[in-house]
Image (cartoon, rainbow, N blue to C red; front, side):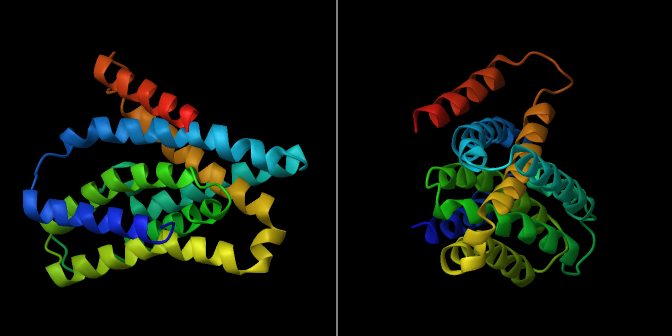
Length: 223
């Protein structure tokens, strides 16, 4: 299930957009806010304690910071698609390779902690659904042929399970468990906090978003 659920989540999101054809991404802001809070809370409750247990705190902190910097670098190419923004030219019909590669690296890294932290899979799934929906809206509204859009989504859906497979079957991952998970934590921290900051809409108070954020944190704590 660790391998299949991320694939199903992305493919079903794409299918939903093909069938429902929503044009307004505003409807998904609450889901994005929930996913950001849920992923951030699971990172704090599940991943942080494990990497700091018996490890050099400074080494852990270094790799967390490297993960944050890596995600900032990836967003130069993805234009923020990991947290619900796709700022690319809709008139282009060529395959968006830079977007695909940056999202694939992000998704590949997401799969590593799943092997030892089952609950983090739920955070990844909740994060993937709104991103896959917004990405699907962009692909289907652009000049990119449907066959290329399906190819993009299908390959994208495989990246997280591929990361989980590598983590489960390669000894070097166990050897560098602390460093890799520190990197992933940095990626998660950047993504989830950006989602939460952007969901504030000019720092205006929004009761609905506050409720879903609290709900996301509470569910993560209870898992």
